Length: 172
Image (cartoon, rainbow, N blue to C red; front, side, top):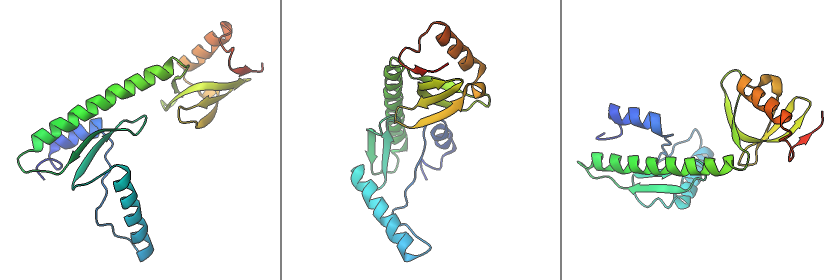
């Protein structure tokens, strides 16, 4: 109550984090669901080395690496805990920027469509207006050039004009 329910903390957390709360005493509609949730909780506890209650983790968005681990809570120390969380989030943001910059050097970029949806990927294939975009985690997305934002369509035209697609299959 001293931290998590405060409106200023909630506003900060909504802006800077993706929160996941795991119920230490899971319930289920039936015994199988409850057992499945308990097993999942045990696996998360083991994976993230959660040894106390509550455990707050700050993870790097790109790798899932634990940047900050804050275990336990003491009354009257809510501002100290929040300060630690802010520091962890700041470090995670720095790691994310460095990760992104390293991938941009390898040809990854932010793509967007007419509706403002975005994907961070590199062009894996281009064939007669059809693109396959490869995300850093290996997922692939297929789209048509006509669905891209005008900025991305301009980028493709510039790349085609400069023949910069040397390492991408182009069949036009």
